[in-house]
Length: 289
Length: 217
Image (cartoon, rainbow over all chains, first blue to last red; front, side, top):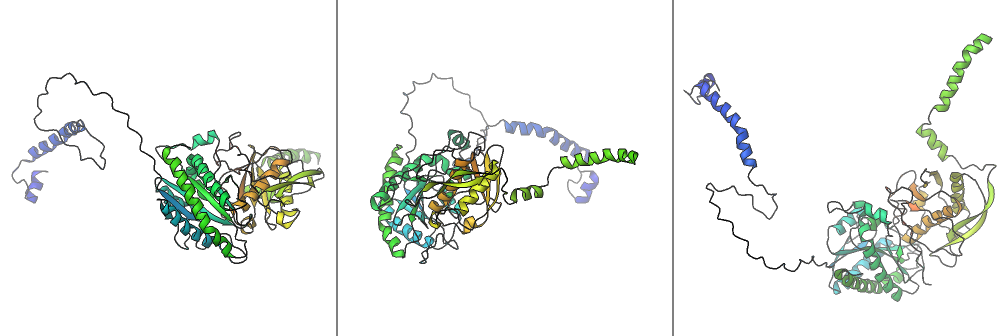
């Protein structure tokens, strides 16, 4: 700022221009010195629970002479990993909205039947002390990924998707999980930075899903004559993107002459699923198989 | 005239060589693979093992031998087999694929990956359900596996595009393993049609098929 500008602005009137210039040059030259001194002070990453770092006090105190460390107490017991708990069931009535799923000649719609099944199952599961969330409450049509998002936002949950087929022996129930992957493929879906690839999220839970499927299928075989005693494996789209133990239950079929036959299966279906999930919870929380 | 011919001939020869080396355009290649399968004089009538629904067990497939002329070329052979699967089911209730569906194209990549492109009817005409969709894919995979060598896995497209599901349930994301030819069995229950990840197309890296889950009757 020269004396001409100073005169014009009324600022620093009477201060020689050269002194001002020297002042600014000195400031610019001294800036690196200031910034390096600041960098040497300790920095810690801010976390939501921590206060910002404090600047050091103006007068450093003389440090006391080093004391021999007191005998440290013997190592305490190792910290146990957090206990796994299973408290939530995500029920997914398949289809919905414009997608009615399978349709029978008598007008039975898969999307309506599975919603009624889910409501019955909710009651039975809650009686077992489990919380239940439905991926749809009415005739809306969330996408596969919408349903997976809901499931993947939870912890300590299992996922069950419900379907009714067009074919198959009427009055029977099949339970599906995804198939095992080869070890080389399993390595490819290992978590990186704590994240799972979305399109293969289920692959780390296949063993648990299979176990859940076994427990449910056993209950179905006891309640619905003609149902298999062992579950099935199939590439069910909805299961692939769920990062939790997940199974699909398919009931046969919409080809029945009336919906009453399917509705009659509801209570036994709900009870069987609730018992199976309760049994699975015991295994899940104990970390066993 | 002789001199004129000597002058023109090298030019003609170069033009012919240029035409030979000209790569096909994408449209030309698409037309080549979409043309109707042609029965060639080299087709031999053989006994092919086809997999349709079992009459005694509607939840499973049954191997049925039929006489059908098949080409020695794996691509043509596969097309003929899939067409027979669609059109020559012994009875309507044994059909695994919709009768109105068309196989639009069939390719085999050098790594043994087959790509089967079906018309939209495979979705619109397919009975909806995990079981029916699984059996449909299983019937194609087993039929090809029983009668064609060199195909390890199969990708299914619908009208030239990747589809999320076959008819609302079965995942078409990955590749379906093609089983190796096995001795004909009276009934074949649905085994795992576990697809491999689309990024795992290397030889020998396909997911192993799980043992068939027997159904109680």
